[in-house]
Length: 395
Image 1 (tube, helix red, strand yellow):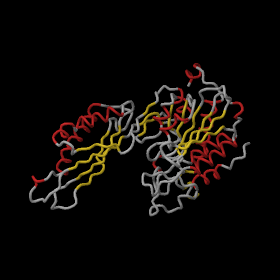
Image 2 (tube, rainbow, N blue to C red; image 1 turned 120 degrees about the vertical axis):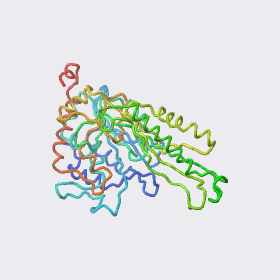
Image 3 (tube, rainbow, N blue to C red; image 1 turned 45 degrees about the vertical axis):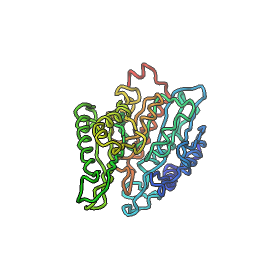
Image 4 (cartoon, rainbow, N blue to C red; image 1 turned 90 degrees about the vertical axis):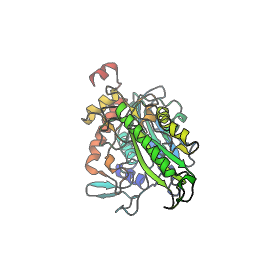
């Protein structure tokens, strides 16, 4: 047996290593400590480990580990992100960087979302005879999933990463997820001309122009609702949300600037540039009416939607082992980027998504063993027993 720490000790070490990613540079942290620790443990298990600093983010790192004879192709990728969201000191009743066992739960930042997944992976692999693999196993640990997904956008830097199957261990209560919507966030800024409120025609009121902009956006919202549908989702249509607005500085001044932040969540398969074009087209007449006054800026790179076929080998196997039909999810993950590697991809991991980004985040103790058992079965079935066409038909 490889000399890596016990399950709870690994969990404890991962939680104790802060790796917050945040667009606010005062809160943003490197994930190097977590990556280096995973590299040590995976090396002890016999994996060949490659660590790369992101080209887009100094001090942020991706890790890819591989085990199995070099001539073997395909195999299974087990993937997770190493970063967490910031924590709200006023709302946590426990130290977020100390694994606390209480009330049949393990508390700590990242216990569910999702640094703890790596403890599950490592504990699963420690008792396996990895010299008898018939397919390679990869472990991927990424940076900055909680902000820009910069790590997942740089997977091309790992040469010959072409698994057949991928499991992303986001918290799903070990229910397989085979599709989710994408996410696009835009800032719309209206720049007017200030002046005294007693002479409205002397300026251009940005709030009044933004009122017309929001009317157009609500028309686009309705168009998305009426035109596109995927019945598998609880909300079956693409959504458009007006989430933040600010403008003006005094009641007796003509507002010179008004800013709106909005998001759209496209269905799987909807191209990102198609959404951009729809937004630009919807506002085109207003932009002609007010030349130079209306700007549209993406607030982060778009995250595509993703889907894996309902009859895919991995989906059917995960349904069999978990006892649950595969579901869609309303949140975003790195699945679209990993799916682009050409593999069947599902999202399936221990813990509940209801705990993600919450104070006193936890995972229940009574779900640890069942989750480990299911993960072990998945690895054994995918990497120790060849999945032939006949076996696929039996799944």
